[in-house]
Length: 349
Image 1 (tube, rainbow, N blue to C red):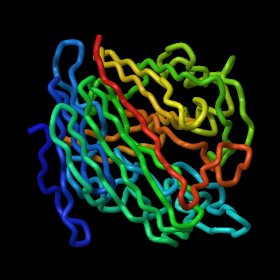
Image 2 (tube, rainbow, N blue to C red; image 1 turned 180 degrees about the vertical axis):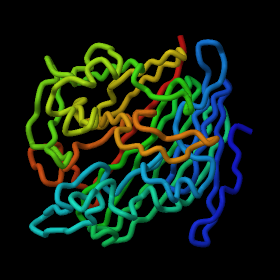
Image 3 (tube, rainbow, N blue to C red; image 1 turned 90 degrees about the vertical axis):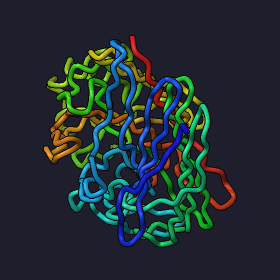
């Protein structure tokens, strides 16, 4: 069997499961139906030893009580919506201001990371997959429309974790789905990721204001510390005297990767372990976040989730898109398809 499941506990009386997907290369992917969170990605390093390369928790309670969206599916709208409000078709919607009382972050206090997802199907074989579904009722967190979401995880024969996002709505709404896994390619318990070498294939980014939402400007990365067009260690320019790094307390920025709907090679991450992660997506942007606000809570095997011990590459629409008509539109209307894919491919050298 290339896919197995076991009980992971209960949330509000509903049983939560942990699914394990395994391919012929020995790579293992663990997913919980609570928040659709990735719990483990165990893959080989340069010495052919297996390492778990994502942060997380040993138990369901960790995911329920955690404050950093470890591994989770994020929605209805990933990232920030300024002031916790937006206007759609002339109607203003007021949302949770769960981000320091200022913005709506990752869908509010009861975002998709807090929901127990149902399993639509599992598929065994050389490329095992798990299909999760959730029906988000009209008015939840004051977002309009009942949205049916389907997310499919597949572990491929070429050692990729493929995440496919599907959604449909019965009313016009805004939607931005992503995954919030923190990667440490040296292993979840190996310390900070400042030596990880990162390349992002993006010539532009969206500068943020003091509340970490885009100003509306599109700025070239050239001649700034946000230039990752050539590989460089996270630490290289991190401590530069640059206003955007001060605002984000480090890298926490949206990079523009190209047109929506076109699959692109968007990033490469390499670590001392020899593990290389190539990222592909057909979304128009990606958020590089280096765990600036991790607070030392206890993670797997009593490890500490300390500041900058993991990095995220969250594929997305631009943050605060509902309030910026000049940005790619995140509006979904009845009858329209929402389908995006992100692929994290693992190899070693």
